[in-house]
Length: 147
Image (cartoon, rainbow, N blue to C red):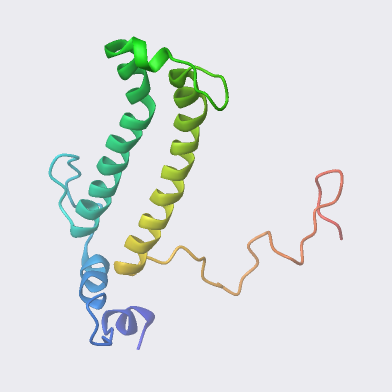
């Protein structure tokens, strides 16, 4: 029995995550058409939903204050009582970058949950061979490997 034979016979645990994971394993992504408007697999559809939602939220966070300043310059240009900055300056200088960082963390968590749902494992398997790196190969200060 080869590794491929054992890989093909996957026993399920009766949960709902095993069906998408099995479908993901059986999909040949090199033969699937990649269309950003009509994804061909369930994983691609779910991931694209996360990407588009994140993009819309990012656009609102980054371009919202600028657009509001153009539409309503009076209220957006008033000085904030606490910090003394104009409101539009504070929103663009602090809230937009902070919102982008928070959005990146949310995307990473959503992507991890998608990977778990579809059985995608990013850890590298232990091949038992020498890969040229690892804990035994400490880098010397000149860039070489200590012997």
